[in-house]
Amino acid sequence: LLIVDEEQEHSYKSENSPRYHAREVAIYRGMQAGAPVLLGSATPSVETMYRAKTGVYGFETLFRRYNQKALPPVKIVDMKQELKAGNGTAISEPLLLALKENISKGQQSILFLNRRGTSRMVACVDCGYVPMCPGCTVNLTYHHANGRLMCHYCGHSQAMPTRCPECGGHLKQIGFGTQKVQEQLERLLPGVEILRMDADTVSAANPHEKLLSRFREEKIPILLGTQMVAKGLNFENVTLVGVLDADMSLYVGSYRAAETTFSMITQVIGRAGRGAASGRAIIQTMTPKNQVIELAAKQDYDGFYEAEVTLRRLRACPPFADLISVTFHGREEEQVWRGAQRFAAMLRAQLSGEFYRGEHVEILGPAPAQVARINYNYRCRLTLSCHNSRGLRELLAHLLRQFSKDKLNKGIGTFADVNSLE
Image (cartoon, rainbow, N blue to C red):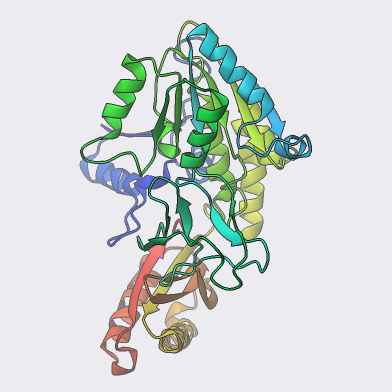
């Protein structure tokens, strides 16, 4: 028997070679051994649910929580109204009141914000200058703990300038990270201990198991963290969950954006009320009428699935088609683009032949990758909307080998990925 718990979790997909998906490996391994494979989740991926509903997988549903308790009621807070009322912090008035009430009762709270650091970015209020990573096409994130601007892709770090290096104007911090929220909570709730759990606080010497044990045993009032606190935790004394920025993963360039947001919100809400006392949750958002936010607040997976699978069908995204991306990267931008165009021409020529007439492939690009430069390497990619057939995989493998042997492509690295997270 192979059990894949939280099967929708994106960390099962490796972003390094050989870029496997642990769920698919488990299914293949089960077939090889003649063993049943159990995929478990309160919020299954759209692909898994589609296969269950179409009879490819068996399907069993649990209709009650393990502790027989009702799911926690959820309140949606419109952060635009908080700003109009003069509250510029990451903590809305309803959430602050709920935190104070929980503290007075000796109960614990979990706050979820999937961004570490102090501020999302720093910008000049006069000329609009934003410090960028010199090696990546991303804004630098300010970390108050060390007073530095840092890149979360390549690790570049530099001192925070006192004034704008372009015009000498004032630099303003924009957005919130877990560090800044912790500082705000310490001001709003003086004397209350707050445990922060993110990539900056978890280390080999201070693993997440140790932090979670402290939270449980020392009854620390508030646990603030990134996606590490969103799923799989079972604390009987936690009766309040706050989602600080529900929009963060919703408006990104990925067909999985809605699924990721719905799953994360629903999973973290489920951390509340797992003991004797009932729980509740508060979702903070700038778009309270967004369908995904509303369905997550209701914890209506069936409603979300029906809406999402319709969009996936229209957009020819998984599970109705596969998206195979071929990424090209190198130090010289023009060389990378020319290499990608040569590869695209080779691929189109092959697919137009008689042997591949049965393959229905739409080639998109080449186009810049979502992050066009990482650690001084430029990146562009081709995307194939297709059926991930053996013949197509063998063709791509052959063309990639031919591409790497061509002297014109010296200095250009390539890799292919199926249904990438990016």
